Image (cartoon, rainbow, N blue to C red):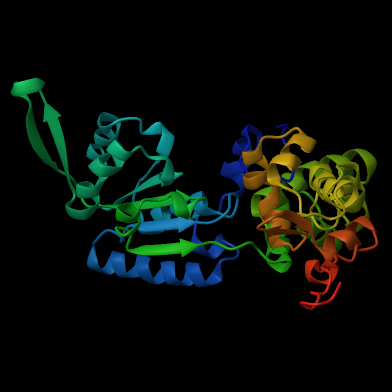
Length: 349
């Protein structure tokens, strides 16, 4: 799969600007207001008692600020953040190395925590519950277990797939937050803030145009801002307004709904080739030359969330909203019951 501009997955290019765009405290963080207000209370209570925060799980689609919130928690508490990811903790020794270097009340952030192996996950349980870890020394009949005490810490786990977390691990988090997609007005504030950090002049129309096409995701909004800035410098006066933002988005083939060429191609195949569906996911994968998992994890979620696509037991169907987007006349689906012949009487021929 080629890199998509509207993909919420992080790219190496995004990592270069994370340090610039990432808020340092709650006052700079835009959106997710109910969660932020709760976190303010938890942080203040932790400060007053001198205790670590309860272990937290932050879940939701990529690009909404899970890693940013972990950094903010550590900054607000005045402690160190130790960040890693589920696949990086390959064995119990790697986990022990992480846990033993934690300071008092430090934050341990594990991204994609659902990808921890079963062995590592089971070793994590006593660390979460009682701040202890068992280390096995020796082999065979000479093996022995040493129990090491750990300094109190806060585990912050992030996941895009809550359903893949085991029940024992999920039950050990004291607080679970699910981040939602951002409304356009909050994305406008994010674009304005990022433009100020970039020292790029932007007006209200330009910020609104970028926010509308960002699929409710700050990471995509910041990525589009960087691309639009290039067009403004080369084709315009350097200032981002509504017209240059629209020209840049059109050149990048991102429409007003945030859909790109691949999104529209998927909908066109369902509407034009299969009369609006239903069509099986494997058939769509073959028609698009993409793996089934890519369609289910990358392309479908936003189309489903925005109401362009529907799932039925028989396959995927295009909604009326998809027909309006593609400027097609909706096909009236026949009711199977109407096609059946009326039942004849016992003595009727």
